[in-house]
Length: 361
Ligand code: GDP
Image (cartoon, rainbow, N blue to C red; front, side, top):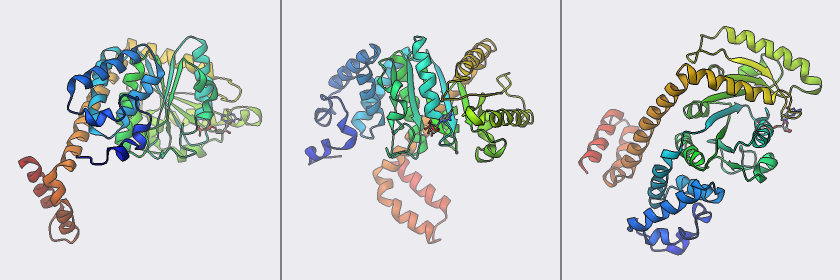
């Protein structure tokens, strides 16, 4: 799109944290492939050295909706892909307040002590960078945030769930290329976001609160079925007995579920993100699980299925974008939509007409 007011355009929020050289020049140089490629190569070099600032900048490009940034982001991802895949990807879910951030802070600190490099990403479609959104408030992970060996990134904001998930999937690739060997993905345990997260992780941990039975009603059955491990958090002080009885109740409830394809039983344990009780044991269970699924082939199978899922998802997403950006479609869309809403045209006929316009252009 022509831009007559470059100054204003350059001041948009998505630009603020871009590399200095990308600011301003990005607009002027969109035509110059060579410069783009050089920029991508430079950023990838810095990412490969594990530089967190470069990693953050590249993720900002991924999250940007500007076509020139998307093109640059695509090149960076392509270059990083051969260096990806070398991590364990763990999803952590649970209702707000269950202790996800506290859990990640504690586990992350332990893993750093073991010499691991930990990246924490979030999938939170409701995030508007507001207070309360997951990871929006980084102070909740103070120790992790200051460590050189950790990288924390809040959920991309202002996007649909599909958009957030796709960008997080791409951010994983960059984090892995930067040498992060443990990727923790936090999401809220309330709905669709789990399905999206499930399609990018190797292990899913569901955190629940003590208080037998009640919480399962707030957590959809599908999420419980997706979990590879359930941990009843806040098992400390007066809540220990309650947590133990919740653990038994969940174990009984899990018996009613069909056996899982990964050949593993979903275990239920208790822990406390406050005292740290049980958290190292959970990490060991994750490592044990990984060993089993790597041996029985499920690990590889799941990653392949995920690759296929993202192939289809990306095609679908890009086709949709191309459709809605198509000039002929844009011109006629409101009119056809109005006719459909007024009952003058069927939804199918409306869609057909628009698709025809799209294909003809
Ligand atoms: P999130 O919304 O799931 O990320 O939950 P947070 O980690 O922000 O925790 C919510 C509140 O519960 C905070 O006040 C934490 O200090 C507290 N909390 C988290 N884990 C525990 C725990 O294991 N025991 C106790 N007693 N409090 C905890």
